[in-house]
Image (cartoon, rainbow, N blue to C red; front, side, top):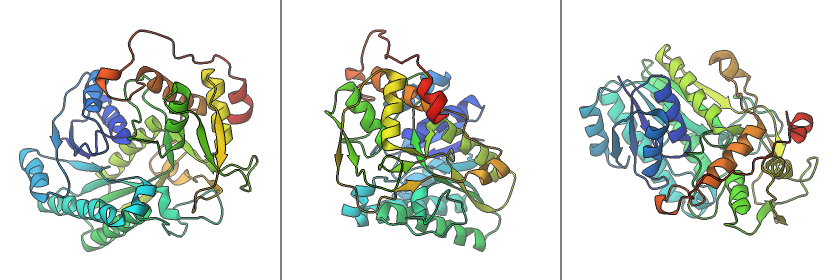
Length: 361
């Protein structure tokens, strides 16, 4: 029976679809393509050599969701779909609450109706708010600081209540830290709309010449170089974590939260230096005012995932930088097929490993 992947055309969803197909799973993808591109699904098929059903559906339409369940004998759901920009959520809180929470409730209602009670939920480390210390474990207090984070936290609470009401459910709550990188083929990767909200696509767009310089938000934090420190995880490692969580929910009846991160923190300027060393491409930057609510240091304690899911991140920071640049170089305008770079030019990946051997790995 197939796995339903909501938001499967998106950045993390598409990489997870590749891992699922390569592992022998059947998949069905549901996505409204608001923050993703149809072309990413074509690329998934190119990478894996496999086809799969796709439904262009909005989770706010419960009838359309039900049609997917009527037409397919679904075994489990991996739920990525949702709006995800922190800044936009502050400007448009009602849109985020309605889309993310109502859409999830609609999905859960249909899952319950058709007796599909295995779920892997895409949560976020934003549910921890401003942690008082690091590394961050799953037992830390939960206090999201923006509407996007609160939608994730509220959905987690809804899922806990659902499990309490019916212990036949089995649910994994995956709290991501900072996904970066791309598939090693350079075929799929992160394709943000407008100015990137995340660091690595901002770096790669500066490197490719789409933007003049990187904005570094603050340089007076209590860190080694004054810039914020985060836990960056390769998106392929993150995708593999979903397969491990899927195995867990298939063999148990419980609800558990898991941090997915590397357990290491890198500053913004370390990331810039790492990218420059890996690719040989300079990244000019300027320091601007810090963003309200940004923590100085944030990285995961991922020991629970290692212990209970038998999962650990394997990709190095060098892999993350090289794969991000390969994707951007081969696709300077993302998934727009009419603007994809042609030719077989080398994406200028550096052969030097000194930085990674001494400061990173």
